[in-house]
Length: 204
Image 1 (spheres, rainbow, N blue to C red):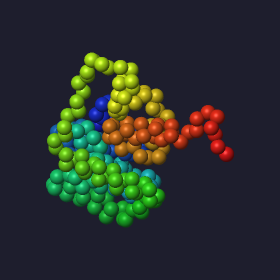
Image 2 (cartoon, rainbow, N blue to C red):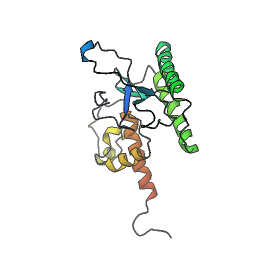
Image 3 (cartoon, rainbow, N blue to C red):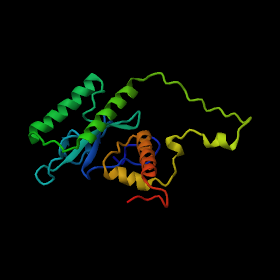
Image 4 (cartoon, rainbow, N blue to C red):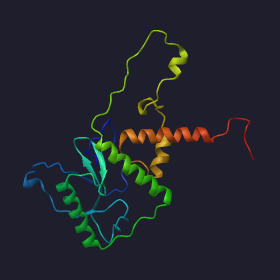
């Protein structure tokens, strides 16, 4: 994971110290540099990670795209046919070796949210022609009120978002997709503002 570059910089949050990212990118490595073989378990994101003592080895739940510098879940179905077959085979080998792993328990809202995110991801993968955003600046007649109507983008969010990022990280809703995670942080910040009572208006 530390070698997987993140679009826009930074590092990917890890769920487990044993976590590795799978990649279809191939590097030629001299045989002398291979120290020893290791066991890698390909575990779908909705399954429980096997016990470290019973099943030592690394865990793969995400696929790293070296071109887009993004992470995808093993369970995503938007891969090319040969790559999809490769992932399915690796997951199948893991499950045949470990047995059927129990599902993680999600509340229904998290499951619905995850389905919506998958649909959004599929839609964005299929979009090819995106109209460019008009960022031309009209200096004539620009007033202070015009400036306050500036569109907010993930880049325009305040830089002290660590508190919100930590909350989202603990809730395990961050995907590592920079644009989405920044908007989730912004959304949480907005919801907190909407839910907090102004001074002097507190209710019992």
